[in-house]
Amino acid sequence: AASQHRLIDYVILAFAKCGTTSMEQVLRHDSQAPPGDTCLSVGAAIKSSYENWDSETPSRANNNIMTGLKCPGGLHLDYAHSWGIVQPQSLMIVGIRHPILSFESWYNMFVQNGWNFNDPYKLIPSCQDYESCGHYGCPDDGVVCTDRLRYHVALAELGKTPLGDNETANMSFHDWEHPKEVPSWYRTVPNKVFLYEVSQMADPDLERRRQFWADLSHAPDFPHELRGQNKDPIKPGKKGLDPEVQKERNSRKIDICHDAYDDLRELLMKYAREVSDWICQYFLESNDVIVSSRDTFCPEIMAKWKVDPCDTRT
Image 1: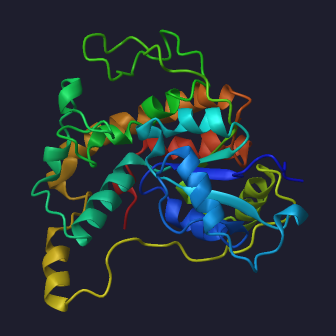
Image 2: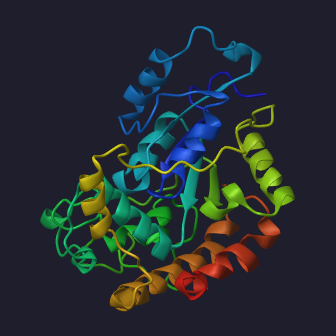
């Protein structure tokens, strides 16, 4: 049964365009949670969760429901450390997606919402100093850049791995005078982490998909199978636009498999290989990290990250 002193059972922390909205929709079948993103201070987030409590929802004392919230990008905002101090027993749910597929989805969603980047290659440059770097680690206080797809650097902040020299050889941290030194503020977050790869949510292997949702049910000590796991994935972005406006926005979206983006994919493939290796060699060695179907997670799911998904796209 869920612990009564745990005010929030789960927090969906990361990463953007990694199924967080679909995950939230499934969990909300059995949860009391504020709608949408709740990237508030921990105290404000807890207050928001309970202010939004539905009086007709079955009593929490009977363990029939969970409480939770969603803050995609939370690992880039130092949110996890604050959360670990206030609610160390909350389960942190973290989704990842192949960087090439994530970048394409991310870019096109922002275009659908009216943004105009002009050129995807302009999103490659890294921050050069503290003053120019935004909350998300992107230059000029931006929210979209390729550096945000270096998931392993953000996950390393949880302190679940030793962070020795071999482990950090392919990492550079946001200390521009000493980019290879692990920042002193990287400290252990006590919370358990449920890590998923977005393809697991709709795994064509039905038995493995059922096991995924069962494992997620049990991770925060929820005594029931999650409902809603057969819902279709949610596709965020503005809908119902004027046809001419929609046509113009479609014209600015990208097919990342086009030859024009070969160099961009080469960089993202470098990140994909680094993330895959780090997760399988280091992150999953922690007893605090939970994955479903552990025996196939690396040899089958993460192994696909070593391959450009455009090679198999039809």
